Image (cartoon, rainbow, N blue to C red; front, side, top):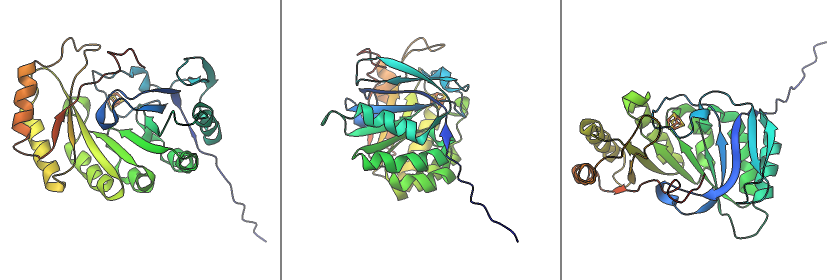
Length: 257
Ligand code: SF4
């Protein structure tokens, strides 16, 4: 007689931190939310402000009281139940949070974990934003329909970005959820890349917001693009796409995480 045994594997993920903070970029800028930051990334942007998001960290910082920065530490990997409990702890006071942002690193490195975690966040009555570099379209198919808003980066070749993959990802994203795009703008931006991207995005859907984010100097990047470069780029892209906005990062200015 053959016995079939169901093996239940509890998905786990490597995280950097879980905390309550103010969203510093994109369309939800200024919203108070809980950030669940995953570690590791498949790309290598030189302006990355989460360079520790590349290797696998061993320690996770978890805030106990929202906004107090009273972190406790745990060891990676974490289980879904542990992350759920940390989110519940931070969102106990009514009215403070409406959103949880899943960010990184690259959250879609952990698709099974996201699939298991998301229903718990929804059960807590919170909306979910996924911040992603948009390079795993297949993985988004199972996760996307339960995400309220997808904030998708379109990366340049020098960061490891592949426009074709990004556009495939965008096709999947717009079928499953609300989505907007972010593109970081370095000094002397590669206009041809931006134009090609805006044109392709417009063919997919002319109403998807495209946010230009002047780079925040960090690491090897010493200055943002000039005001003239930004004005010229927006003007050029508005010839290709209906909605192009310039929204810089604010969390560094306000001293947020
Ligand atoms: S995609 Fe995001 S997390 Fe990954 S290297 Fe680039 S900026 Fe950093």
